[in-house]
Image 1 (spheres, rainbow, N blue to C red):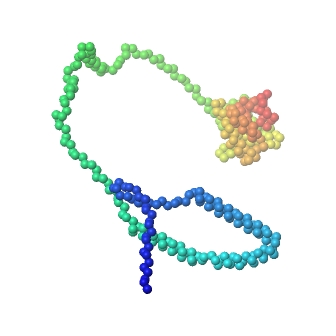
Image 2 (cartoon, rainbow, N blue to C red; image 1 turned 90 degrees about the horizontal axis):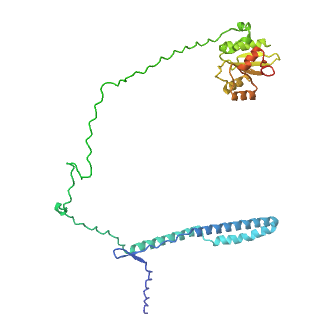
Image 3 (spheres, one colour; image 1 turned 90 degrees about the vertical axis):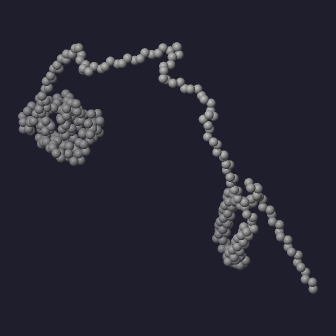
Length: 349
């Protein structure tokens, strides 16, 4: 028998790889760009998956409702679906086979990539061109430049025939060494000495002495603070408060005089001996209002002063129900022309 020789297979013609011309004249193969997934395809896949899941959920919900209404048919349908599901599961490839196929594909791809790198021609590298050399030039000679005009000197003054030279400045006169003495001396009249009036000392009286003094003629502004409190207590005793007494001092908590009015109310009085230029402010009223009701249990709270009250202090007193007696109303109370603080009102008669 004559052996038949099989014809040799011709190698498949590989598709030429496009190349680009580099500076050296060689051609560099172009790299193939990988296709990148677009955002539109990804969004379309997400929408399609959501639509499929929604359809499956609606189908399962409808089947569950139908099975609840027809339980017998649902059981029969389930028994018939068991063999079908078993056949589908048997026909599906196992996970082991899938892993083997994936590994084989990866190994084949790596072998192809290695063979391509071995058979690829070397890529020429562009070499930088040598920088041009510069021939050193000799330094210029001094005679190479023509002489220029000479610069004028300022050794002699310049006169052009139209400008008058300025005279030289004269030397200033020497300063006088003697101090300046005016020809006349101002006559200042001596200022008259002011005689300061001695300040009047505050009057200090005891409670017994105040009970024997006519309170209508008493100057409350001339009393010291302790005597002023005793004078207010004496006014209370004169007008019907037999148990009026002073409790002022350290730790008095805003109460200077405690008394019981003729109608039985508990009276708490605070005394402020101020000058005419110093008025009782709202802070004094706030401190007194914080203790007269809660601490001393006052049923009538009164603040007596030899001065005046500011407008905010009067507003606070009206809102809290505190009776305010200024210097004018105190004088009217002492003289009998005005009522006592527990009367109908402190109005002058």
